[in-house]
Amino acid sequence: MTTDFLPQSRVDMQHRGWDRLDFVIISGDAYVDHPSFGVAIIGRLLEAHGFKVGIIAQPDWRDLNEFKKLGKPVLGFLISGGNIDSMVNHYTAAKKRRKQDAYSPGGQGGLRPDRATIVYSQKVKEAYKKVPVILGGIEASLRRLAHYDYWDNKVRRSILLDAKADLLIYGMGEKQVIEVAEALESGLSIADITYVRGTVYSLKGDSPTPACRPSFTIDDIADKKILPSYDEIIASKELFAKSFIIQYKNTDPISAVSLIEPYQNTVVVQNPPAEPLSTEELDQIYRLPFKKTYHPVYEESGGVPAITEVKHSLVSSRGCFGGCSFCALHFHQGRAIQARSISSIVEEAKEMIEDPDFKGYIHDVGGPTANFRSKACQIQKKRGVCRDKQCLSPGPCKNLEIDHSEYLTLLRKLRGLKGVKKVFIRSGIRYDYLIYDQDDTFFDELCRYHVSGQLKVAPEHIAPSVLEKMGKPGQKVYERFKHKYEAINQKHGLNQFLVPYFMSSHPGSDLNAAIQLAEYIRDLGYMPEQVQDFYPTPGTLSTCMYYTELDPRTMKRVYVPKSPHERAMQRALIQYAKPQNYALVIEALKKERRDDLIGFGKKCLIKPRHGRAHK
Image (cartoon, rainbow, N blue to C red):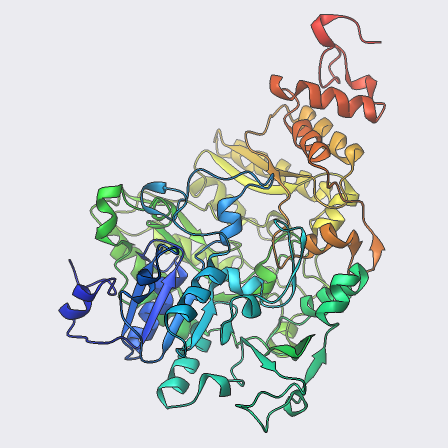
């Protein structure tokens, strides 16, 4: 077995001449040594700083020996549920169990437990009583404080407490993990690592002052905000909403303070976010010696499907100031854009060209939002992101700097490389940011060179009341974009299509709004192949609305479609022409007294049953 990958067995350790590891990483995903996988980044980064690291990928959580197979680490265990929250990985928005898992060998499901981070942490604590356990990854990051859990339909405690872990790293984690690792290596106790930005820890005891920290209390934390207690927020949805909006406005490294969440005899302390990586630091991450593929142990199983979409793609940035209410990026990566240098990306592309599997097509160049390459404005660089307003919603901020020139330069360099036939952009274009650009050069070159026959964009809805709750621009903005896209394609004689994504059952969407969307789709003459049901996942403004039926920004009531039957009707309306949706569509139309949409006219959505005139 090759030793180029991080060790997964004692044999791998022996090949490196190691008797013991400094850190053991436990992951809910199969081991893919690619920078699109968080565990690979953390493992390689620790390795680059001189630490001995091994990975236990997808251990059988029913067998305690699985957690002991690499031995007891010198410094600690690092635990991640995987690239996706394990509950999202396992269940659809309708709470139906998924059969496949793209992050497992051969796409096989069932190789990780529900709530993987908690299960793994508790197993490690059972196997080794006194070894530090540190949580990280998206599952831990978005559940770092008390949160509404859609699958239990209740407010759960901080995952740090349920996992019985010693420390939690939130966000992308590179700076934090090195600072924590070096502190442990120096001999500092995990209990004393309370100062690292981007981490969460607990203080236990009535005071609350633990015996191991007799001189440390929350009074020693200079800049802080006390949140409503866990008991208070489980008793009051209003207090939950108020607590959430404090957290939501506290995600920028420049302006954030420590947040204190009280529990009975315990407090959970969230330190301010870590400073974003500089361009140079981000470039260093992507220069680490990744193998860019899955571990060869998975070859017999058919590999790991999740590598397919990212193997020949390039990450150019992190963060997003788009402000979509249903997106958790605000809580995880933050709103401040962190961009790699053009030279770093081009060098990675040159390496990609040498891959025997590369056929000349770069599948994507982007990030959370492909056409964001710099911070939104100069003010943001000095004071951090605005607490009480968004960059693009309800319209563009007057301070927003709209500039695609650097991204254009990058794309031109990539498509000029020998061996590159086409460079696609698939990670998502923020179309309102693009349409506000007074310079059409990028829009023109996007259509000419970077669309693979169809461009996917996400207007999500058309009803103003829903778009406002989503943090998305109005329908007229999308229409402007659509017409311009069509005009540019026509100018160049290109037969390329625009594929809009729509979401059903978002807070604010009643049946009337869903019918408005169905009418719009009818007028488009396009039936969406895919529909995204709103999925209340931890860490989003929309999930707070879903649970509390309040908009935490205003504390006003919000209509929320919660019953599975109404959600099914809203979903069916988006695909009203499908025969299997007929009963749900006609029920929704009758319920809203929209009989005018049942008939044989051009404006009708469906025909009467058995061709009879509708009464």
